[in-house]
Length: 426
Image (tube, rainbow, N blue to C red):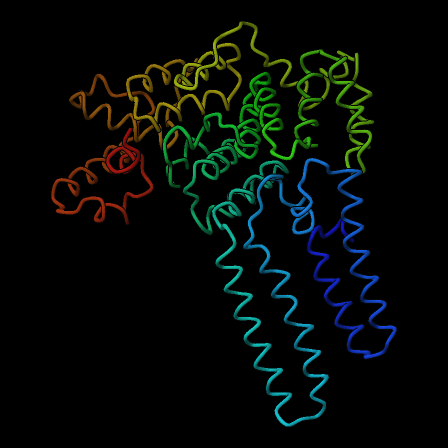
């Protein structure tokens, strides 16, 4: 029970104590004493055998369910204290027999309990983190439609949640058309910068993995795993390290991580299947994911720069012009940083320019063309008349409104022009 619920088994102990005391027999006091001794001794023994990095008091309260071994949020103690009120009330009601008003008191206590429970959840829960963890789960499980559905219910506004949304749009090939239908908060919403936080490294590493930057993805997941404050290892990270080392033909390293996964319950079968790919170069080439990523590996070394992510995307695309996601992230990076000069340079890198460019590309080209004087001979290929007319309507409303941000939002809030004028100022 302790392995499943951690320090919250204190609630179970309290229930047992009250149940025994309600018996009012001499044996009840003996069982209560045994229960307390068992509770204290069990956790002490667990610490000595498995969790010596934790202070003993932390294990009694939270166990390994709280990852910071040297700190504990004592507000969580409200949970067992509140749970104690339930058996205490039952004990009081049982002592009152059939006194008048006992049923009413029980109803009042139930109502108060629900109110306190709702208030506690609303106060103690970090809903922003819960949202990020939800996006993290969906991206890990490749549930791209679930990511889009979640964003449609409530538009994400944190860098990690926006990054997960943009990844889902790219996986569904919607990014160039629908990127600015959602809130964008700059380059961090495409490629989050490295921070020594596990969730940041895990989510950013997933993006680099799907872009084809295998070594960068490996660095992120390894660094993220090493930032865990309780010194544990992440099975998710180890699984990814197996994949990156198989792709890079570092089979000895991959075998080491596979051996670790074979000791787990839920990843043993996956590890056994991955073991069959050791030293099997041709078999890896036929794998739907690993083979594709191996074919897209960069052949030249370059310096990874957090300040020049668009340049890295350019190098990635030049190494493999069939890498659609690399090109879309390259173009997206120039759009969110409002670097329209580089946008046009990268747009012209395409072997064949489309007759009708994606929506966000057209909106950027219409803006550039207008800034350059709208000369017919300089009209970009792929720019449609309807986009030019929409930009003219946008500019007319912008010039005539006293509060253009508010006036333009209902009609143009999902356009690149609105982002340029009112979003993300570097």
